Image 1: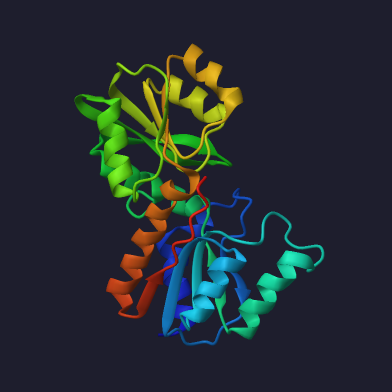
Image 2: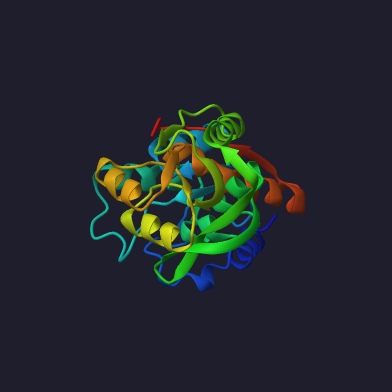
Length: 255
């Protein structure tokens, strides 16, 4: 298929235009491939490892959640940046990134996918970041034991280590879901939304007491693991819509 058709679909489906405040330069970041796409690889990070994976797979398109260009972009292309970009060009691979748009998407997004895994109902936008809500709150029927929530995540995400912080006897009724990292603003907004459990990727020491004082419990299921969900959903949508060959590059960080 034509590269222009694939990128136009992704730009529109993920509503890149609606995320002007995102520090990631969403969309095509490196135009290293041809104008025709025969195989696309999907990954969480645009690391040398995933670019090499795409090269070995003979792909000409690489879709990632975390790109290599942020904010005002590159000042100098040296070191790791040079290696990554050089390989993209030499292997004929176009790099496409979708950061906050992939977190926020109501159907294909990381957070919508996590809510689906947990069976959350009555979803509402949550977690304002750079002008957009990227997460969701939702309710769990009759309250759900923390162990049950963690088990669902472990099974669906490939058995990551799900760390729990808070009340072990909690029967969660309302959850706040935001993939990747959890910051202070996430906790404050979750408390304001009436949540009793935050489901996220990674949780930092300095937030422990704030969560406790806000009456929040937290499950951290891994930054990497929680952000595979949206990448895989987009991959499946592209495959079903366009019929091109696709492959997921699983390169976990353990974090």
